[in-house]
Image 1 (cartoon, rainbow, N blue to C red):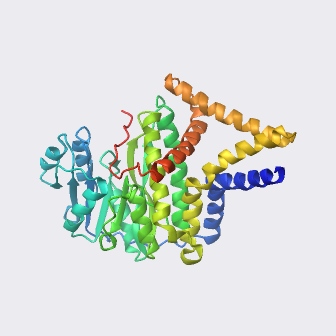
Image 2: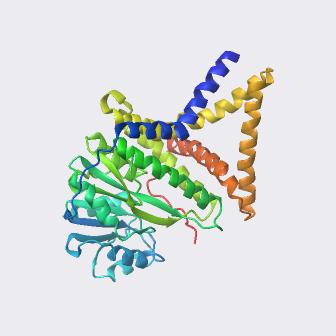
Image 3: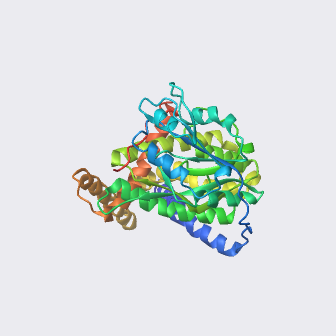
Length: 389
């Protein structure tokens, strides 16, 4: 039993380290070895594009979002703005209709974001289509910096960067989320340089219209699914960090946890739906990146945290000092996470505790998301997380 526990500890310790840190190290080395073979882009390439915004009860932000979208630096005759407000019970539909430059769609029934997008996609008559969330704001050059990548015929999707705006007064949710996305952005940049980004974020991405296929309305994280389905057909997803969507972090830890559980449930669903993508002999680099960057975080790594904790306790009680020290190191780490949770609830900010807290919260969300998925409790029609003011 002792030998089995030792083997399990070292196996899962490697998985945890690789999933969160090691893959980034390996990726950086592979990118260095590959060298720079970037595509040469032309300044004159400005294909027509339709910008779709699916807005649900966004009356507080929608007018500003429309203003931001209409002020983007792109030729007016090559840019169309389409807003769908299906299911909204506030003034979102009215706000969209009050802007003549906007093509607006609305129906009272709420069927979820991807159902709304599927409904309006037949009205898109441009070669490219771009998606952004209603609660994000884009930099002026974002459309130019997305579309230029489509001059490369091997590119099917271009993913923009998500930037979480945090301030000194922000709590663990917003600050932890901000730090997480800075690290994720670097990984996405290297993923893109090696072969392909592993899934676009719905805050901002664009696809070739001809490649868009109606998505099953049960899909929870449709942006991730759409981009990977296109990648499985042989076209890559490029990363454009100079096209970015800005938003505030979650208003509270409970709101961020709600969002993470939904994403985790969607991640488990995606692994099931995209099962062939686990075949590295068929999909090569794409499978390697997908497993390393996504699958391990949604499967073995969270399980490994529990296995390492229990096995190190067992071996420590058997008199193996190294494993007892390992157990106490975990106790200290999780105590810091717990302290972060306690202080957060009392509105006391100690940013040094945000990382252990956010890390623990993310992995807890994976377990909750898994159970929610297998019980069929996570609908594609979900309540959005509240953002910080």
